[in-house]
Image (tube, rainbow, N blue to C red; front, side):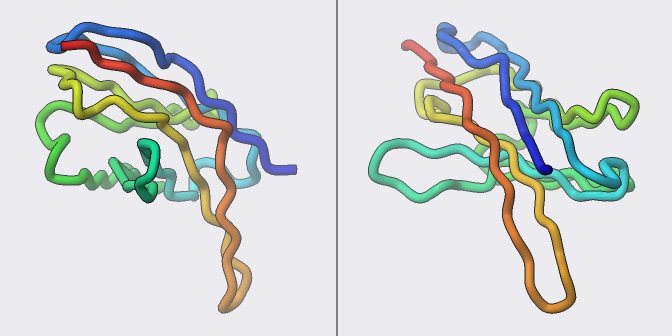
Length: 119
């Protein structure tokens, strides 16, 4: 059974830092790309960062240079280190893993963790 549990959110002042964690109970963790998304009320979820099994990373332009995604395959955990936080980073942050089966796929999501950045 796939389970993703995020933690590490909270309230922080602008310019501060937070580290989000996502503990994953999934098969073949080290091979799977992992994603961090965020969502604010009334808006679609936005892909923030992703990391492949080989460690290649990609970021949305708005967080480049401020956020770092990483993974610890021994702990089945993916992290999002967030720095120089801005009020516009306020959102619920979710991790996601995708399972592929032939031509179909299933997205699995965690429950989310709230990040609030005060000005």
